[in-house]
Amino acid sequence: MISLLKTYLRPYWKALILVMALLMAQAIANLYLPSLNADIINNGVARGNTAYITSTGSFMLVVTLVLGIVSVIGIYWGSKTAMAFGRDVRGAIFTKVQTFSQKEVNHFGAPSLITRNTNDVQQVQMVLVFALNMILSAPIMAIGGIIMALREDVPLSMIIVVVVPVMAIIVGLIISRAVPLFQVMQKRIDRVNQVVREKLSGIRVIRAFVRTDHEAKRFDVANRDLTQTALTVNRIFALLMPTLTLVLYSSTVAVLWFGGVRVNSGAMPIGNLTAFLTYIMQILLAVMMATIMFVLVPRAAVSAGRIQEVLETEPSVTDPAEPAAPAEGRGTIEFRDVEFRYPGAEEPVLHHISFTSSPGETTAIIGSTGSGKTTLVNLIPRLYDATGGTILMDGVDIRQMRRDDLWQKIGFVPQRAFLFSGTIGSNLRYGNEEADDEMLWHALEVAQSREFVDELAEGLEYPIAQGGTNVSGGQRQRLAIARALVKRPEIYVFDDSFSALDFTTDSRLRAALKNEITYATTIVVAQRVSSIMHADRIIVLERGTVVGMGTHDELMETSPTYREIVFSQMSEEEAA
Ligand SMILES: Nc1ncnc2c1ncn2[C@@H]1O[C@H](COP(=O)(O)OP(=O)(O)O)[C@@H](O)[C@H]1O
Ligand SMILES: [Mg+2]
Image (cartoon, rainbow, N blue to C red; front, side, top):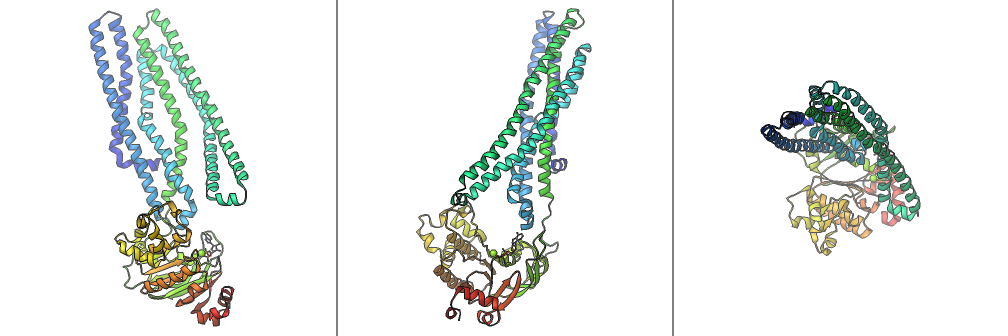
């Protein structure tokens, strides 16, 4: 927590010093005012000296006014600093997460990264707001209060010696019970979130399998657990206020009682008694603040730890220290004896993959589900780094290239098409902001989605919902293809991008693509033999190993696995 605060508060040290100075000024004024009040009573009221009352009274008024202004400025700068801190930390987490490869994202899990960037930052920020607005002045108030109280009357100050420990013990006891419960509560909140998340994402499955009651029960249990814990915590805290009030007023009574005796005997002026009352309140309030800090700080420290963990994670896929100059060439991809093992997995999922795909060529990858096709194409944009062998682009190891240069060359259409919230137009321009409408329409035409966009009243301005949920799966896939086309990259990667299309659209799309991207290196993952029959090179994958490579006709001769796939999908005449 300290290092997090140190790093992200450093730019605001001037504001911090200002806030601390203001808090200190505030504390001193607060300590000074009651003694002025005592003077008015002792020297003015008791002796009927109106002039003294007026002059000291107006001075007090001025001090109070200044105090008001000072606290407004202090709170303004304190809050501003705390918010700036939150903003910077969120920005840092976001920037960091952007550098993460799939490996680090999987390690934390997306929901946890989101919680860390929102809730956890907020916890730390809250402590900061609290500290900058009042806590920092608590020690001054407590110590200064004791000194001032001693100045008013020494024997009476004995009360403080008794009351402060009592107060600290009570608050400490209550809080030490509550803190562990806070942790339990955090876990239960997580659980409720988890059930709701699953319920929302799995709603269709739940209904189809008639499990609505089951899910409702699951939620009920999670919800009731949370309520139970929250109730217990609140019951404990319900004790806090009355007990504190009891201590406060008992001390008041004690002060008035013993003070009254001393005033009566003439050992102490009455003004000192009123001042003393104020001081003891200030001291107790300061003690209370300090103890509240003991609740907030451990919680915030946990959050700060979670934030640090993200910030300190080094991405496994990084830019090289001395990137190679972008190679001359038009996007030749070469796999050289590539092996890949998922982090933590025992066995590699890809073994000894070697092939070259040149501009103007189409390389198709076919194989059963789980054979490693997606894994293979994900290595090209370095979503993961190969664990063995090398992947070269135009003769340069892709790990030696700047990632932006690499990505600039690739048009990637993933297995699960993803659209951003915005419009169709903004999504298509994602890889090429300068593209004019004509280019967009052309890409749509090639991707076989011109008709569907034409029919929309808004056309290119048609709004896309978050995640692209307001267009069908096939439409989403075709828009993702159009998006890659608008970018005009040197290498196209289609990971099973035609699977959601019907047969006719699929073949029309392939014909149009063929004319469109004659210049590029194309890598296509497909399930349907008909989609890839005419590829220049077909790679047959089986359990991560290349078991056949060649054209359709060659493979029909040489690869039993390929023949098996072909005959499971088409008749012998079609295959020929
Ligand atoms: N993130 C992952 N972590 C660990 N194993 C994975 C991960 N993704 C896929 N796999 C494993 O890698 C193998 C190949 O998966 P994948 O490349 O998706 O196959 P395909 O695209 O050919 O269906 C599968 O056995 C799968 O279990
Ligand atoms: Mg796949």
